[in-house]
Length: 269
Image (cartoon, rainbow, N blue to C red):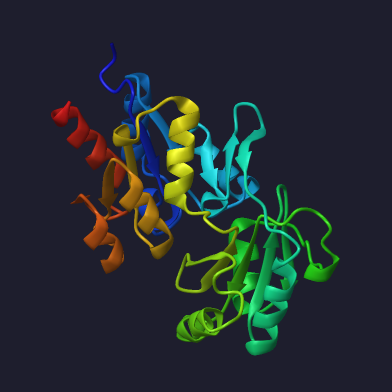
């Protein structure tokens, strides 16, 4: 029996696995390979669409399907297919219309299985498009006929709490899951979709006991990942709410956090 048999390690990408300059350190890569080579299952839990997360494969290829869309789907890169998915229904359209009308400066992106559509642009939307190297998929959200997986509202950091209040006071507040995924992004997801729920769903698919799951994160959208995992880990740069929910706090994202966790597991097991 290999050292890490029966363990599932799932990490957030931005500001957890990735350094501030959006790369995976050699130290983290070496530790992840060691973990997988010794029986462990490793993957990502991200808000990104599969096409966006594919950039990570240049650094490391997980040996377990990825939790994506902030828990709205599970995607298997080895088979190039979704293992499980949730979807937004037609009732998401009036919710987006409501937010756009209530806060006109908002940027809007709609994510489908294979594309990110830029439906209403602003500075944050254009910056996101540039950083992720997405093509020019400009299209009014009313014209998108493919199944919606999630919607991202994008505003300046100073406006994020205003946007949160608008959503909380809207007639749609209880119809979907909403989560802040960065200082500038507030997401509309299928009801019940969270990274934590996605992790446990993946564990069930793989036959992993829930208590043998490990979740790592930093931001508000990682809270459920840390709370629901058998071992919840916050990086040192994590938001306070995530640190308080964690079973342990490790080093920051620029100090090879996944390596630190694998080293801890080596001593624990």
